[in-house]
Image 1 (tube, rainbow, N blue to C red):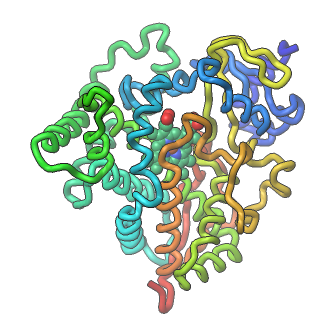
Image 2: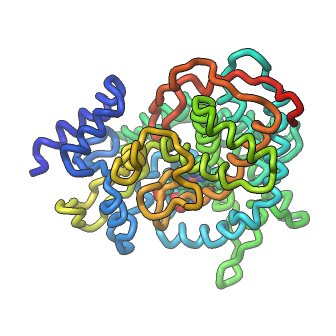
Length: 431
Ligand code: HEM
């Protein structure tokens, strides 16, 4: 029954690059929300967009699907004990330590950090001329995450961290990591001195910070929270585990939130009514209901992360199919978020859909779901809303071109094709 599909399904992703997303939608339409395919470096897979099937995957009992295996590509950066690649028990333990520090009530201090960063972005942007906002948002978001994780707030200090991180995270390294991961069974990850040197330079900074803290007073940032944790026997997390969590948080947060914000601005400048309403709300300053709706809708129509996945450990019935161990299950987020049965006129950007309503269930999943759901979702929304408020208060935003920016799909990211090209003008009486 699956016979024709792996071939047609395998052709779908490359065909999408040429013919656009309608190819994926057509395939899902023909196959009832799930199709089989073969992905280089990943292997036998099914691509899913049906919320009932996604629910079944995410609520599967422990031991039936593996949450970590599909994240192994990140291991050279986040380490063997990084949150995303830890086994279920290890992952649960680290999440229990981290999550209280990532709740909205614990993140209030991040609002001020985000405000200051947003003001600096606005002050540094050229006025009256088109430019890409994306790179400036990426820098600001790395600074935000350094403040949250390591308490780095001073510009000189953060510049040193940014330089070290850039050498590990630059796109060429990312592409090589993916390629080496695909060749892992042929020893693709074995020797790679240049990368190890870059990573060690970054690691030295993290270990030096851990050492300073062991010798000095406690700090209240995320590293401080991790360093205070003890297990039932009173043992604390090792330096290696701490290092791997710092890199996991930076890897998870580094570009995702900036991409989400870039898409939100890209959608808003092409929907002047929504932008006007958001600006009105920012000026009044009391409520952020519309800003929340704008963020939910932008994350729906343009999910920054294109897919998330799980791997089958024990033979598993998914819908009417039996999946063999080793099969990867990939959730296609843009297709899920454009299901017309869930969202009438799914391509329309309409924040009003979310007024008086919070996303829930399995039809809106920009942050993934189940046991491995993103730990930074609340922080991401806080950063997005704070930036939008500062922007709309101090500048008017307009698109640099009339056409929508195309979705540039790179690895697991959906990026704005022109890196969010906009024109800013000072607002009369704003700021
Ligand atoms: C709009 C911004 C963001 C988006 C769209 C996003 C999306 C995602 C997705 C789809 C996953 C996979 C979840 C799954 O497999 O079910 C994930 C995991 C993760 N995210 Fe985010 N993320 C964002 C921001 C952040 C931030 C700000 C942080 C750090 C504070 C972060 C840290 C992580 C980590 C550490 C994981 C791995 C969790 C685990 O395996 O237990 N993310 N994220």
